[in-house]
Length: 401
Image 1 (cartoon, rainbow, N blue to C red):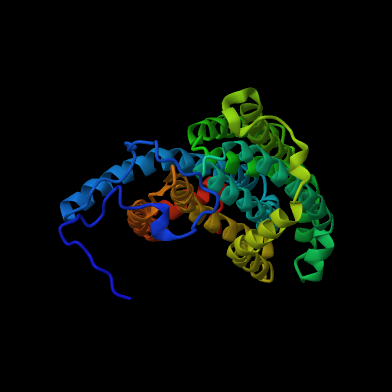
Image 2 (image 1 turned 30 degrees about the horizontal axis):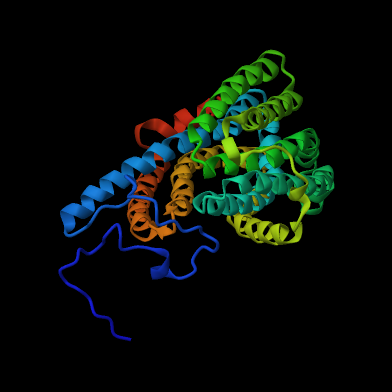
């Protein structure tokens, strides 16, 4: 099919993108011809210089949202990292038990809940972009119902940790310690079930600074109670579980209080019975999201199980945990990708779909950031400047680790 193009027009015009150009991409978007130009729209691009000008503008906007999200990821990553550091200074066995539970048992539960929580991220982003802000609270409550129901099912998986690990041929002593720790970590799964939907709910509204503040307070609290319980009182696995559970519940309660105290405007209008309607469709979307997310984390479970088959399983699992924790730091860049996704839905304003050029600019910047990610990975993977020794000794002052 042939099209006639006016070559005198700019390559991209901020008034040239509307819903009619792209079909029914997002349904039920209210149109309004009364709205004027928005300062956030993309300007005209006639040449390479214009492209880099708009690229810089979009980069600043995305970093404004992504930097707090990355900081939040760093803080939440620190919960597990600090716990493993403290446990490593107690004994290699406790470090291995925590690593086995975290990598094989808890990661599956977290993956399922995080994947199912991605459904509310999609729906809240659509609703916020379509100006249906009042629906966000309903989606949040639906997600709470589904994730807490899933968490109840995950409890049985945690209770069977020891026999499952023994069935898979893991070291009996390591399996017993990991099973003991898994039972103590059951409250964390319900903290996930509340905190994950709240995080997606707040991200859809770009309330990322508030999330970073709550996570910052929680990581300071975790460092303090972890040091007291594990290093001073020598409570071992019980102290580690108590510190992790309390820290994640602090995050969940902090975010919940922020929402219900009226800081989200029309997005939260209180609890409603509407949350129980049409749950089946929400469940389908949640399950499909969970499957995709779990496929990304099962490789770590497989690596940890393989390490448990080696001649000295405690040292092997502990060493793998240290290595993976070092790698996991670099995944905190993922907060930028999350904000690119959220921004894509929020760029729909008054029936004018502005996302094609904006998302191209955002994607270009994301590709550049991924290049930085892999460069950082190579740097941390190298033994230059003795970084490997420094990182290993922070977990355990033994040369073989």
